[in-house]
Image (cartoon, protein in one colour):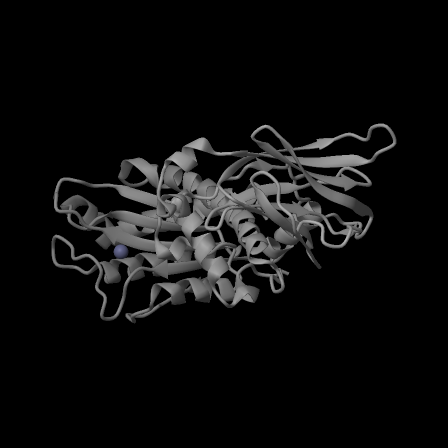
Length: 390
Ligand SMILES: [Zn+2]
């Protein structure tokens, strides 16, 4: 089984509790104290939880383990304070409570220990965000990025089981009708990216430790989404897209490794959540029947995990590249490249250098230069997986 899927399932298992139905919720209610609206769930015992706020419309979402709910009929229909009402959803992945809000709110969430014969209580204190209210238009609040109000500490997932060869997907940028950047000597980016990727494949395979899949191995055009789809369908452990930049300035040189930016990731998580084919968003996890709010949080969790791993790999790769070729001063950067948006696959995009610079162009064209990029990738991949990452 794909280790990433294993890991997200472990994560979800931690999040939602392994002992199904062991916990029960006997009540849920709203209270008010000045400007603070308090939401309380009465629990038979303490549980792990996660809270997130969402905009457009404003909501707070509480993720809980699978548990038995015995609430009085009609509970949650009446609002109080900033809360218009709340709904409890129970699915095979766990429970969630969605609180519909009249305005954006900050959430303070905590567990109160058992007291006076009563069980544990999970408390959400919701305070209207004055700044958000003052920011004016509905458009402004709709565009505000959802903020994590409180995040529980997840126990670290157990080490993955030993597994076979890791699968690296190499994605030579551009191709076919799309030449990409054009070099100082007239060479096309699409030729360079393919030549370097082929050398990378040769060296990775020569180690005997890795399987390699290329999104293209000839001069063909391939849409960006298709590149990601190919890699995800193959259940890649790592996705490396290869490009070579070009600038107006001929003097600028050096390589850069990109990973997905948080802003782009937030947007992507929202877009993915809004799409129809929900079953396919996170490998190995059936997301059908999840309320939309919960879905976007699950995608967000998965994507955060992938972004962390991508950043770790990017750090290692920039060091290995810097030992061999010219690199930009700020050589790990964040951007919203479309090929980096898979929520469940660590992904980096390497700009080998600037084709507009004669020295960079000479390096990426030469066999010796291409071998250096390939050596850097092999060493980085070795170090990345040796550190016990899945
Ligand atoms: Zn490119």
